[in-house]
Image 1 (cartoon, rainbow, N blue to C red):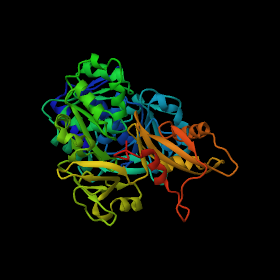
Image 2: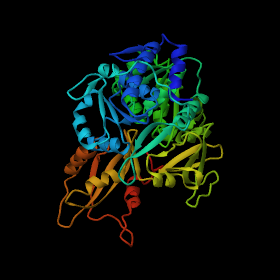
Image 3: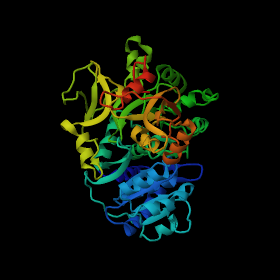
Length: 517
């Protein structure tokens, strides 16, 4: 089944139901279907058969329609994170060989840099307005005939390329085909109640889990309510106003809601599934969330290469763990393996380990990526021993609950965003006063983990932490820039001079049950 078939199913069953809603726009499924067809036919008229097309926008209803139009036209969607630095997004456009870019007016200032750096970029279309050299969406639509092109129903056909940070400092393109999408959607609905059409609130970035969840819910006739950014009060008001049933947020955003002085003023009784992922939640915060929002909290575990739903800790399992002291430890888990995924714990030699023994979390099944785009070496490395290697360290208990306790990969998850330390270290090492550095994640009450740089200066040189932070913000954007910088006279090294980053990191995680936030 093609990913666009899910939207068509909903449009056939609920043509008058609201499909997309924001303060500026509202489309029924029938209206959205017509608009998507117009955009898809223009894409078919202007792009090669296997074109990769990026969407660069804050959360926006018309941006969602453009994504669905790319799917309908049988082309490949490349999401661009608006919070990335311009240089990183230019690299992603180059790495994925994008032919086209749909861009929102809030981000059009970056287009000249993209055009200068991306040789494959042929067409730039303004989602909400035109500028000199940027075609307005209504004008672009006029180049098509309004008919959706015929697309083969091939489960292995490439549908999207998501970009993930790389341990070598460059993002890798993660290929999802129809098989990955179909399995992910099926997995979610196997474990959730599909009895009534959802109302899904999108306030986390649509380029990440919130957007993926939207595509998962749409086949069930979901109304997608779009906020252009996350604001705790806006989210709480929207849940009550629109009778929201489904919502994804990272733990940091949930903490911000719980700490808001007005959090208990609103009616959350419509909620059925308040999904959190990307990091665990503290047990006391979970207890508070259940008290405020009701027995609706659901946790999942996944990554770009094995998306979203490798495990789930259901709403009922949250309640059981909080009300039964003997089960309380399960709140530290990310749940049990979902029905269409295989998960195991593996040692360094490729042996699968019994319950209770820690090792690398590995997964298998039809939800695993089709590979890294034009990177067979990285694909082979991630698929060693016939399993996908997540880079996460954990163990499973006798009842099958999976506990993520550390990272094998040199990755930081801060506020729900992945930051690979090599990206940040590469920038810092370019500073003339820096001899060496270790970029690590350290515990942070709000963000789960915060990016920290520990720097060894060159002999006779001094390093200004504020200058380092400013440099990283300029090159990488605010998410990946260190929040703090420590300067040490010397970093720990092995007998052969190798930097012992683990020793640096351990100093900040001492005394904690897990080394992840």
